Picture 1 (tube, rainbow, N blue to C red):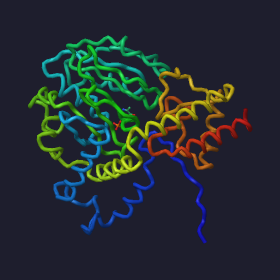
Picture 2 (picture 1 turned 135 degrees about the vertical axis):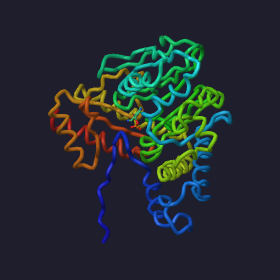
Picture 3 (picture 1 turned 180 degrees about the vertical axis):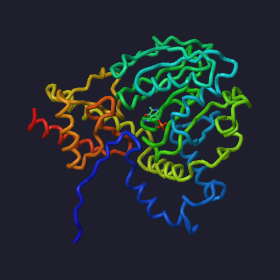
Picture 4 (picture 1 turned 90 degrees about the horizontal axis):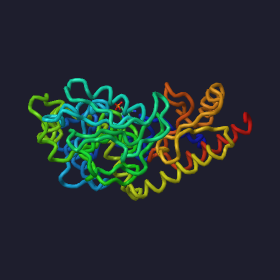
Length: 369
Ligand code: PMP
């Protein structure tokens, strides 16, 4: 007799849901990758087998994002947070100013960190709101940026505050654009050529935590000074084909499986269509609840990846978080400073998961509304 297990939907903001089929492949290959007799976790990063995994992961990522040839791709360690400093350490050589756009929790942290280990002036180019109360995004035309700055930094999707630049800022009159795409990379097509450098921690829309993707325009590598230690130096990583030191081999392997999965789903354009639908029905459910569920973000700035909402009472939010858990809707609690709920609906979240959440929301409202 087979026991029907209830569906579990994981709404974590990260580390986050991964496609089930990817985890099944990893399970099958756990003890014997491709006839080698051992796990990817236990093989040398310099072995031909792992080099091939890394090579194909990069090629598949290039295909998915249509990355031009004059961009280099790295899989580094240190998380997205390390990039707050690596970008400045590497790209500011000969420049004395960085433009920084603050629109929520992560860009605020980036802004506070970027000046460390650097004499550059970290200029606040735009500010989206007050601490813990970011509900709209400053439009790029209002950013106070200088073409002579080393770069302008922004976070395209604010994971905590649930904000996303739906129209991607264009670089006209801007210095090179450095963008934190951690919580939205691969969720919709982008034009890589609009960016000087893109970085993204893997643990939201790509794979497990432990690796961070860097996509850097080749000419910017000329700015990386030998005085920057090799482990933090983009150029030294590029010159050694991403093998300056041991990369996070297993997260890279899983990321590669996710890239293959994305290809099998029809690529990023297809993801965009599904992601837009998931976000629309969830925001509609919030907006049509007669004020029972609240999301204060201006519609033009609402994230399609991290949907935040709350009820009018913190006790009710707590009850929602508890009860939803028992229904298989997991990890819906909002960020610690925010309270309320946050449904992260990355690529791997099926439409059925969002539908199950909406059904629960409506039923919960009937009981407590
Ligand atoms: N930027 C964004 C947009 C994030 O969502 C996060 C993590 N939630 C970070 C940066 C920090 O990432 P990490 O923990 O990998 O350093």
